[in-house]
Length: 302
Image 1 (cartoon, one colour):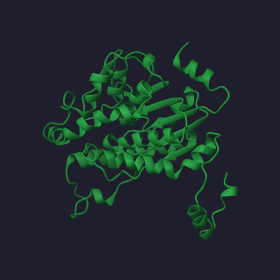
Image 2 (cartoon, rainbow, N blue to C red):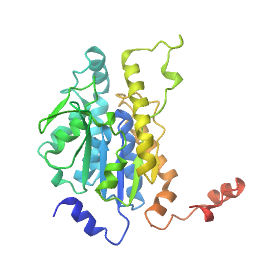
Image 3 (tube, rainbow, N blue to C red):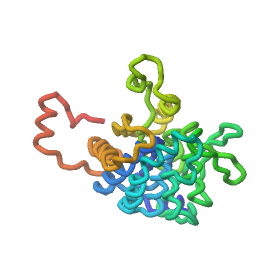
């Protein structure tokens, strides 16, 4: 019996919760905060689908079912942040062996999807025909690596005869994938897709600071276009931690980014509990006061 079948059997009497974790490099550390907040409120995660950084965080959690165990890895990522940025600027596309992502390899290498404690899928893009590739069996690390192979930054990954690149090109927030895995309720986490931000331009107007800013912004805009449709049609709730101001490979302040993810989840926890069919937390007097002041009627919420 595979992991999905086991999950379906265990959750027969309750709604099955799926987590769709989007890409965003360092911004994706917010996923850790999201998972922490869900754990604190005893909201089970039955399925996980991840793209890019979402596949790294999601794959780790699916394998270990212990989000706290990822913190020692983050310390190493933080220590190497400056050298990683320098390597990217000096020689784009050369970061495969020095990548912060490869810090995961020593802990995951040799593991398969079948070893995961939570059914998991990673999304990549087939460079040959541009199609979406959903990986949910076989070697775990190569799937995570392929899902996070950002064009220009990382080399492509050959897996099962396919040349793969970052899944964000075709599916930046894989809510549809986790829905197809069997989730009744889909919680999507979008940390990266957005429109152009005037702050990404220099004081000279339309002159960009450097090629990396150009690519990062273009990738985010493209992701925004794709993610809007997927989230609208497949997600029951979309969490958007306010982390867009962090650069892709700025891993110097992981605690801040994680905190944003946790706070965003807690701000929406009543809705998440309701979707999950669980009793909402007891509201504080101050919350009731502010709702009364601003005319919010929680009793009539859908």
